[in-house]
Length: 85
Image (cartoon, rainbow, N blue to C red):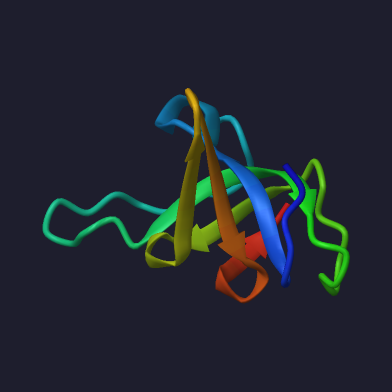
């Protein structure tokens, strides 16, 4: 699956996978999860930076999910990234 229009194809990381990286966002019981962590699998050709293989932090409201058959793909717009490692 190849993303278009400045989108990134990402794998959303679980809590265990994200704790293995260098990012630390302290958990809070009274606020919704605004940020998530992921790994970039592919970038659209018009993205400003090639982030394939990088771990990223992004806003959760920007996620786009597409399901084909049994496979679910998760995309995020490049402008929804907070930072990368």
